[in-house]
Image (cartoon, rainbow, N blue to C red; front, side):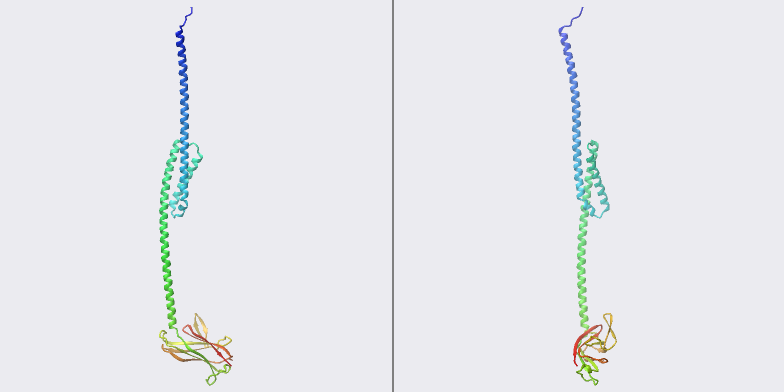
Length: 303
């Protein structure tokens, strides 16, 4: 004989089954939600890492730009140690820049390490910039000092040149003051009796006369006056030896030694004996002494 279950028991069993199904469904939904939350958290973390990586890339780019901005100045300063360290730091920035560009998903640990390296490089950059600025100021000061020294040297050179010029002028004036002067220079043709001869072709002697005025600046003593006579053809007359002039040797027609005392000497005569045929025309008389020319005069002699 079969046992019959009451309706209440069937209801209880049904409710139990439904409860079990609900529990299983709840557990499944919870597990699924937890997995979704974990995936969401991972996605959020990845987004944060990517954002931090982008920020690091931006910081590295900014530091690289600052390095590039001071690169020319770093090259110009004469300090090999600073330039070497500066270039090493700049190369490290380039390496970080390439890593951030090529590595798409960096770990939290690596991003933290990169952030520390970037902070170190930023501090080094500030240090190098300060050193570069300091050296630039020193160099600017040295350039200003060198320019001041150059200006002073130019002023001194100008002053020396001015003093030299004044000394040269003074020396020239002294030489001019010491130089003998001659006045009343004249050329006369003489015949065989020592009388004036108007026809130059018949002259037996040519006489040059002149006066030396008083000059207290001229050193006294024996002085030799050298005479050069040049005929109309430009040929030097006679052979009275040579004398020194401007480092060379100059031929003369005749010479005369006088005793100069500083007082005026008038009526000084130098004779040249005719030993060739003379022609009418312009004759040149030049007088020299002490290495300079006293005068140069032209005289027309007629037939």
